[in-house]
Image 1 (cartoon, rainbow, N blue to C red):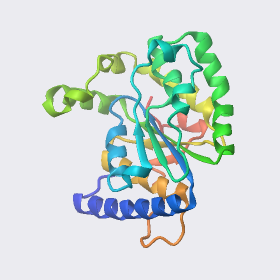
Image 2: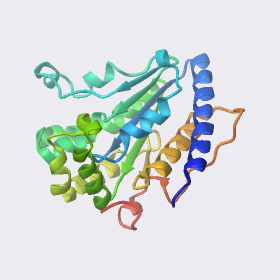
Image 3: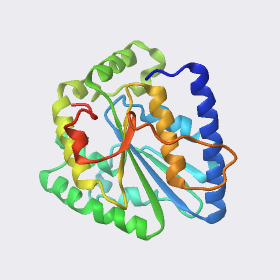
Image 4: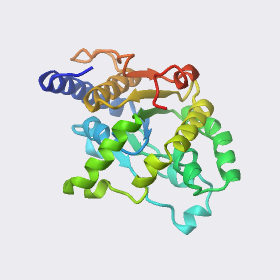
Length: 254
């Protein structure tokens, strides 16, 4: 559903106030928050992260987007280079793509072995359980986009000189290997969704609605009481907690 520019800006402002106030309380309480943004290319990870972090405390907020692993990192325990960036007390760490690369692009493009992929999907629920036991709040968000909208955004990237750094040699594979990415996504969600680290699914064909619902969810998950502003619950037509039925009932892109 479309939203006017005025209504979008008004709610965005309210949600940013809620997030700033929530973070202030988290810092005072020494809480540790970890947010994972995952999704297909062009699904809106960068835009969502920008709105979430725009007014947050720079010293207590880190956005991590790791490059291709070095030869040394390839020889390490898979989770090792991610562990180095986990939040300390009072910090919010956001991964713009995370360890779930091993369940997505690495599966589709063959960047890791079948054994490595199998080990990962077996181990990731236990790894995330250890994070929660260590007092880290994991918030996992899958940004879902339709094939048609992805094609439109990929074309727009090529034509816009200001989006030069958003282009990638893998962009051309996103559409060619759409069904392979769909299969990898489905398997990942089914095997890594858990009560201690659940997935939120957000439809992103409408960027503005997607961003607002991401931020509504974060305010809800941070669960700070007595904020100076009131925020809405997520719109179930845009965002919902993952359940297997969503893979076949039309709520997710195929």
